[in-house]
Length: 473
Ligand code: 6PG
Image (cartoon, rainbow, N blue to C red; front, side):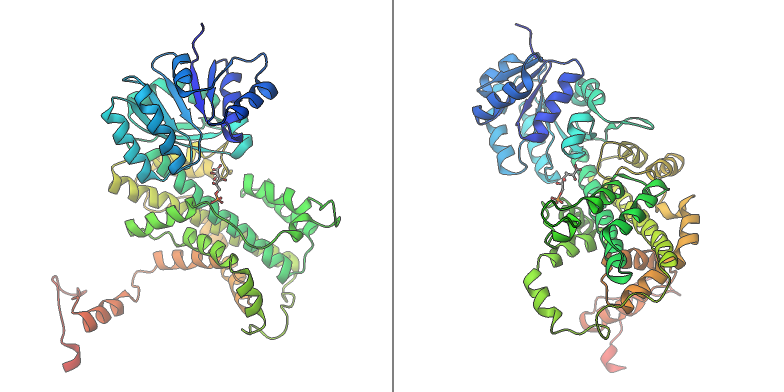
């Protein structure tokens, strides 16, 4: 019997598409799913005449794979992943490689990695981005774990990955859960860009009274320029998509509450743990949380007043405002990348990942959800200056900041004046304004902490730690 080169466990759509992708590159793929019906259906619909070997038990699956076995798990993150691993690990031999391709929490990856290594197995946490289409045509792949394990699968992963302007969008990031951590930051940035786009849409819709088609034209133009990227591209397509029932843009019939599976939240939780300022992603996470309070919002609309009357159209001309909005969104997107990469830098030190930030930007250039033209100069900036503290300090981003920050300020003034919430855009400006302020008011915070808790403070004119009996003064 010809043994399979690669095995995939879990045949939901992402798993199925990855199987087809791997097989399409000339490899024989063994497949297993918890429910046999799904395996049978997959083989019937997509497997005929292909080098796909179905297995109906994990024992059979393991038996069909050549050694060292290369197994990719595409099952739900959390308990389902542990359930599969509990059954799978005892069936494997030393040196076999198990890759978790799900959106697993990086701490869970660390735990599983330790338990795999105790058995002599290689465990890789592999972030896979690009949704269903990416899985089939080429995702962005962010791998972490033992380097020897990665070496064994590098050939296959590189072949199935998206081809970017600077090679296959697949990289090994370092030990432990580094791959899954990079994927979490990818998703955090994804949340922030999505929310920035949603805020721009809201400003154009409620502020300028633009129609979905007019807004689609704007996103189309932005996508054609330096801001271009997948999320802008799909936004244009969404805005042009009609509802078959009403004939109007479908997006206007969609409920305004956004769900989340948790990766944006993990990104923010980690930022809080690290003490890294990543407020823009946090605001995007909270914006989704606020969107979930639909009933409360509808009730509060009638109670809490905003600017007088219904939101009126902005006084500025549409064209000038849309131009400013372009600048505002550009800086917000850049700030999201800047904060995400800064967080990766801090996490790398804290967690011993030894991350190459340029490599993160490189694998995000194609295949993944945040793929965008801006990643090309971002990669270059970190390649040239690996210890760059903040993206905006390097060219061409410094020039973009200089060019567009007046526009971002104008847009925010308009938004606040008309009561249209722009949490992500505001947080981006506040963050950069804070970062470029040599003396922040934290001196007062130090004094307050010392006043009520004797937490002590430092002085600007002398070394040492001081305490004042404030009440006596
Ligand atoms: C990707 C996506 C993918 C998925 C997220 C969405 O990179 O392909 O990020 O991982 O769409 O799980 O997350 P939310 O459900 O939290 O928006």
